[in-house]
Image 1 (cartoon, rainbow, N blue to C red):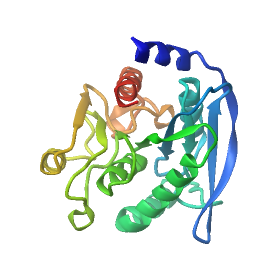
Image 2 (cartoon, rainbow, N blue to C red):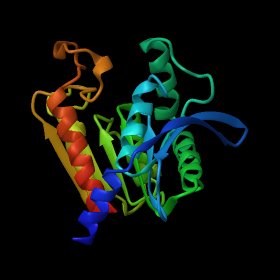
Image 3 (tube, rainbow, N blue to C red):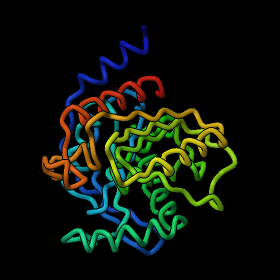
Image 4 (cartoon, rainbow, N blue to C red):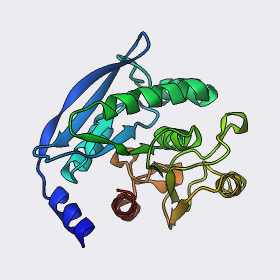
Length: 252
């Protein structure tokens, strides 16, 4: 009952317009976006948002604002670095390949975002989650695989592949995967391998498939033609967001 009352109180909080937030990974400057509730008493959970392959865009800023509206302090992370914003899918593929090919670097950029989020006023460092979209969904899973100090992670239509040599023997963060049932970017074999990985690492995980949804189903920018292999799906976007909210209610 107390948890439900807290959730309702947090959901009613207005948000402060998000602000750019500069931070660093060593000598590399990163340009994130921070959004927080307008009024917070005590400390609240924090959520790190990892962008899709086009880099930090208005989509991730909108997600951070929505999370702030639910009562969380949200940081939309910058994985690529200040000023690195692909202008098309060719450049995006080049950037994404750097980090998917070097998971140690990817994890370091995620950790830089987490450290920055936890240092923000009003954030309870013991109650932090990571979410990500497409490329960022892979990043959210990497945070869990690396044993980063987070309560849970959520992958929205993210890549499921992993590098066994880097993985932790056990995954302690709870895991939610929101997956398009018709997403051809992940083969049945890759899905089976991921689920086997979760079992072997004794992860507390959920894998939710949304019928009729293809890749990028949460993003209106993906258009509405599923035959291209990526498209917005209103029902899947709405349901996956609710699944995330329920996951957070249990998590926090």
